[in-house]
Length: 440
Image 1: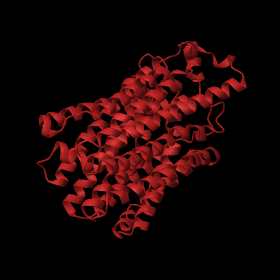
Image 2: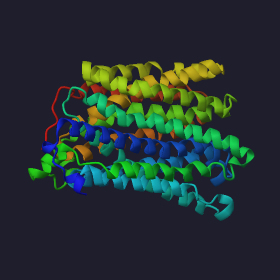
Image 3: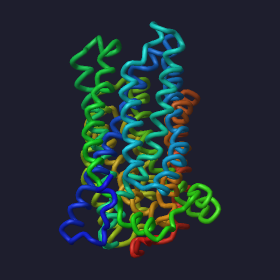
């Protein structure tokens, strides 16, 4: 813990740069693990869990039931945001991030050992639900701390958007790794993928946890939090303070995130269901499109952050929201062609337009809406409440609409409605890219 007490004021320029690089790497590694853990379930749920834990259900109903367990993880996220936000603003970013990493990683590891319905009946689904809830609590506190540990080590506001976009880079990286693991082990295990092949990627996640833990243990506490602690201005009740003093910022943060987070899960979850059950396309084709989109986001995310430093958060973010509204119908038109080129290119491009722009900028803009006293709590709640509302339920809503109408046009209208909410929030938010981070 000695390194966490190093005073940022006593660091040379070279030492400060080294700490910044370490913070960016540590936060990025953590978000890679977070994305891998959470999205691995997303990929396996429609392929495996509906059959393993709800074997007597109709395939589409079983998928909905598996997505119900998936949604439980999202419901837990605001709980984790409030819990870890409190301690992140009370005792510091570093120790809180280590706790979220362990909770998220070990619960994902445990998923690989959950017995199926054939072994213990309905208790398999109950255990899986419990593990998912615990995992959701960990992820609820992870994102806010990962972005803060990077942005609060930035020296000036000139490149804060670019620096803070790198932790977001971990999401497509984790998505890419999760997809590769599913493709590889489905090929290796063949017909046995349903029996044991799907478990291996979950078990191997413990290796990523070890790497993340090693990197985060070497971190120092951020200068902004150190200044606040030395001034003895640490908030005693961050959650209460957020809702009593800056409720408008919380609502804006929730609104601006609501479309972007829904899009990524519609594209990575619902499209697999739609393409395989309604269009008769192989799941590997959709996974390849998602992988292509994730690889492209490795460029788009930092580019969006850099553009927001240059031109402001609001105009770039709003551009992404408008484009997401425009894409609501065309994305399904491209899937309906059944042409592999159109399917892969469409998924990749739409993912970057609807998700990457907002995701890359939101890492800096959402925390900037809050002061240092409640930044961890405010940013985490804004992000995770929005994720619970739209991310957790968007695949369920989209699948239910498809089952009800047999068509995708209601799904497109649903995504447009979320886009309009996000547009309102972005317009209502203040521009922050030129503001200095305050120490108290």
